[in-house]
Length: 360
Length: 65
Image (cartoon, rainbow over all chains, first blue to last red):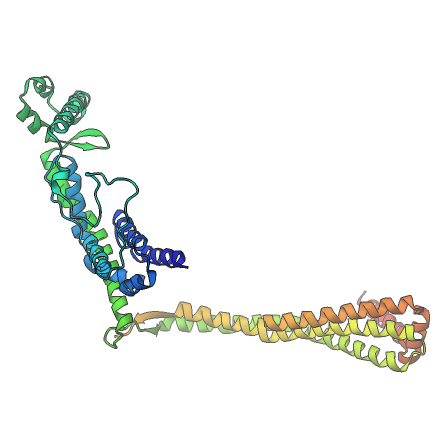
């Protein structure tokens, strides 16, 4: 039962956290899973967590997609040798706060690890030491050497296409280390390939990227805002918070008149066509029912032999059954087919001749 | 409507099955179709009506062609 509650909680929480980036969502779910695993008393923990919706609201309030995007970009620049900010995302801090609450109440068991914890192992619940992300001097030299080799190869290959001056290629080898770094700064690594980046292009691309991704951020923000708004409305519903989405149907006069002029005679013709088979079915049903009732009467009054009586009774039952089906078919013609035909004509008229206008 | 069709077909199917069983039992216990037809003809004049129908169809055909 506790496994099912934990799985249900995490599944529901995962469904509610779709407004986050996938990596952040997975990180958050892993953190909650660790909280569940380290807490033996699920009921006490659920009193703190309350519900997946509540946790989703807490995370949504601490999560800003635009800020998170900037953080991710800064992390990607760290990989290229930039400075390390060492800041944890706000949603991680929010989840850590819940962990601290559970720990303060004595719900968290500190499990002794079966394997020794490495010094370099990072925990989500510990403050990140920025010094851990500083690369060693040897690693820096190795990276620079590999980048230089790739740069020299790429420059030789792309010189005729990208208008890179060929004088730089042979001159590159004789450049000192500082000038090599400056030269390499004009390139960026894209899918393990060195791509030259012009300053003009960088200036043009930078405003374009935010412009292109702003709609995505706006969409994410819109997804977050209604999520919070909807949840708050559910918790404290007020008349002002209920959005007014009433619309009124406005007629199109010309279309309405035209449709009415054509629809009435066509509908009458259709109904007349349907009346013919209906009348035929009614006559047939009446004859069959008469035959069945006559057979019943004859079975009990005209025959002396019981065997003959049984045959006539059986025949009367079969004929009466057929008569019942024919009678119901007549009822269906009148009540189902003809009324359905009229309703469909009216529905088509409403669809064509009226339009939905928001109420002012 | 659908519910009505379901009820009607269920009742009709039951009546047809019962009727078939009755006919089968009657045939097994010695029913004779000639005796049945003669009894019905005496009661409802089936032969007379059938002959009248044939004469009417012949008269209609004669007038049309």
